[in-house]
Amino acid sequence: MFENASKNRQLVSVAMLVSIGIGSVNAAEQPSIPTCAKKFGTLAVLEPENKWWHQYQLESPEALIKVFVSESKCFTLVDRSAAGSKAMDAERAMAASGDLRGGSNLGKGQKKAADYVIVPDIVNKNEKSGGKSMGGLLGGALGGIAGVVAGGVSMKSKTADVVLTLTDIRSSEIISTQQGHAKKTDIGWGGGGGGFMGAFAAAGASSYSNTEIGQVVTKAYADAFTKMVSDVQEAEPDAKANNVSQSVTMAKPGKMYDKPDTKGKVVRDLDPGMTLYPSGEKEGIWWKASDELGNEGWVPSTLFGLAK
Image 1 (cartoon, rainbow, N blue to C red):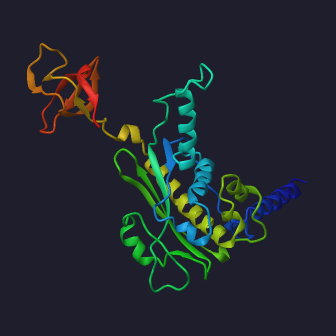
Image 2: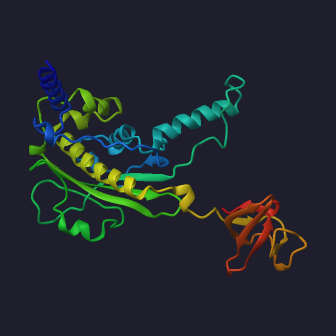
Image 3: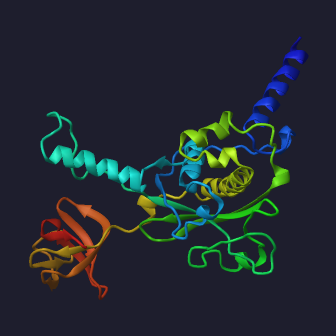
């Protein structure tokens, strides 16, 4: 009985995997989005400027990657899309004009900052490769990798070579850059509307589930995203902890002391407009900071304004 139940579960599992339209009918070859045991911060998905998807009658891959991120549970998503920003601005405008109910608690300073940004692109075009291909990496972010990949999206051979770049917003450090590859023979074409692929239609990316080239691109991005999650899990980045505090400027004249006390030795005088770099060490209103010349000391934070 238990053996039959196990076989039934395996058959159901294979049927579900085939229905999502990714991979062959062999369950061992089916991709799955890896998950994280904890979230590593907030993340925004941004479109590359080259708009490569228009050439293939696909929607923006932004929606596609958002589905992957949501499934992985590695980050909290924040919406930085044009449509999302427009909707938020409209709500805030109504709040400012007094059209919303009292107590709506909607105003400035409430948007959650993104710790990371992920950009979905395709690798550079190889002039000698066949098919209808195009590409465009972000400022050559892949370096030498792009030169060894045929690359792009080929309508003729139904192949896709894509790249995902994860960047720390504060430091501009690239946390992970991964390429993904897929071809038509990787895909099971028995069905594409249900299960995981169905989530793309709901997210505004139906062409990725309804077309062959869209499913190939999806598989390629799944490949790249799986590698990226592995990178993130190994590195365990912490954008807030790993970055220095935001610089400040002197809003008022003051002095830098060698200890958090006005009775301490004066390190130097500070004029309005000067930039200081907090170390993160604090005692009450006193912040330890350094200037552009390397002088270090304590300054009352009541004299600061955020650098712009």
